Length: 420
View (tube, rainbow, N blue to C red):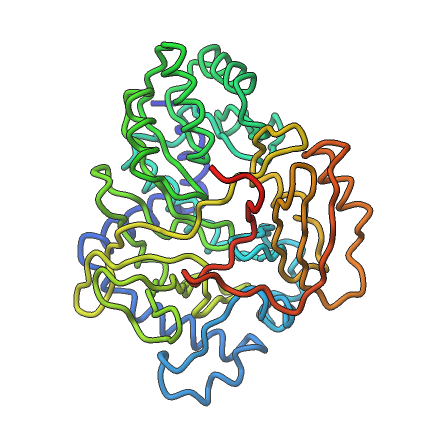
């Protein structure tokens, strides 16, 4: 047995076996089409109404279908009202995650202990279905950074995504070989870039498992990755504030929805009615276990088409759409990670929503929705020049709204200068 897995399991058993209990629950719920979802939904909504200021007036509604759909801008404007009363005095001890998400709205979510344990179990449960066993050495190919201690504990090799050029590919592949990595987890755009380099340079680097996150894994990407790494990639649909919402089947034909720990609805673009199989709709999520900061009917900003519906419940979706980000280039014309553009505003707590676009070879525009008169432009400009080059010209446009595109999405990265 992997030593890190053994250590983790022993620690879990000392905590009354929460991992094994949660894994058993996930297995049972999936095998029996989520029989506990209804009672869990009733419990979390009742808890939220009784303990969370924002949901106090929900007692006036006669049914769950009458509850309004939320997005991050609503939560941003009423932030403290979404933290439940029993946890307000101990908020410093809660697990917190900071995210920007598909709306480009950065702020922090708080998770209670049980919720956090559920998230860990989800990663293990779905990871195992993607040939990723807890504790096995894997590369994490993303924009964020982790401490060396964290990487050691998780048996993780961090490969930070900055510029996706040949130099980055060469260095990354050298690390993968040196560390004998057999599982990749990361952005499909970055992994596809590695796959292209491997193919062009006739490099042999087979993998046992590949999990893509945060972006759409297209059919073309899937084929290129599988051919280069000799392993079919699996797309995981997850978020910092929730956990694993859906996991792609190894066949690549559909995603399994995690209706055990969430109620996931696919609603029409312009109404709160459910869509039929094959119709595009908004992914709206209710978290069944986060009591610290309940999220009820939360619009993720992503879109999907139901693939299977059983007894009125969507159990599978075709894919997650609207998550592929535009490609931004620096002042030299080299591609940079869209997630680094996003990450530059992670600590800008006064920004409610933003949209970043490239308007010229060196010209960039940042549209901002904020309640403040200023958001620290000097620091933001410096952060972007560190990514794009010292000659980058950053313009700001303070707006009241960022309109949705025809698809219903509000992308936070737009390319208006380079056209592929």
